[in-house]
Image (tube, rainbow, N blue to C red; front, side, top):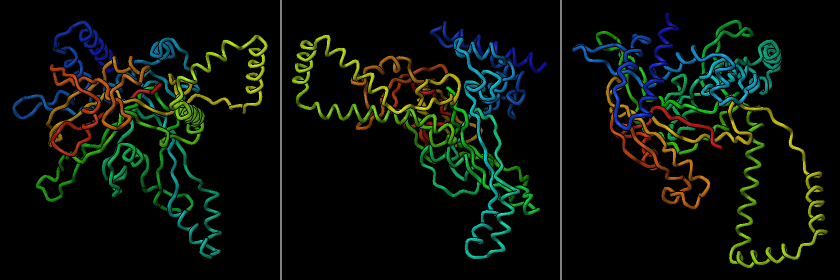
Length: 425
């Protein structure tokens, strides 16, 4: 029965998208709302006067993704999602459905016991007995590594994943890094009791699309209240982000090794381009005339000699070890960079109220990337000031990238809650 309800929900979602594509006017998604309430009864909650209660945008998104993951399974469905391209087990790396193939991140989690590390430090100070104990413990209790699939990254704004960190987060990269580490209490076989462990996560497989949730909402205990029920609060502090997110530092060593090949190649090409530009300042016209004259004078023998020289250069060039894929549907020269293309924002101080809006990058922003000279920049930065649209219920308005970057929070204005990225080609 749950499968039937989820199937109905996905059909309603597809029908809504088709209707939106065909209609220039606003539509009423009645069927989608009804099927959503059937699939997720918590979404049908009402207030004291019978009015629909506002639902959390991330909970709705995760619920939709979960339903789609249960329905869209199998190699043929996954291949269709990648436009017929075959994605082997090495690329999918554990993904068995379309959602995990397109949005899923395979996370490598490593747990290390802090108290054994402390004992090792004591041994270094000259306590031979402590050193011997530590060595034996290290042999029987190495770090514990496990793998799991996630469908989003989280940008922790305060407290960290274990709510104990006091790090001041001001940028999305700092918040993501904070969410990937933490402390926990776990049983230690070597010590024979519970001990403090450090948790560290790395990305072991990258997706074509990446979602980042800002930890704007949290549950605050109210022990002094009459019902001790607690209260849901919102974090208002600003957390900045740019139009491109670099996922390199969040990746495992194996993935970094693959990405580094393309990153080093791109860096070398950029250095070469800059060097040529500097050498060509002031004498560009002379160089063009010189090149034309050389081309006119080149004989067949000289062309053959040039070909031999090129072949020799290729033969003595260092071989680049072929690298395995880091995820399905990613370009061969992928560097771990993701382009921001959509944002869901929340406005208001009430976690159970306020207003959600969607911000989407215009398609024409991609069509102009071939000619960087025509692209508008934001102030004195290298950030492209592309065209975007903001969706406020049935009202749609144009905006620019500079407006999107102001959605970092810090006041009563709209602030980013969900950021959607796609692999940058």
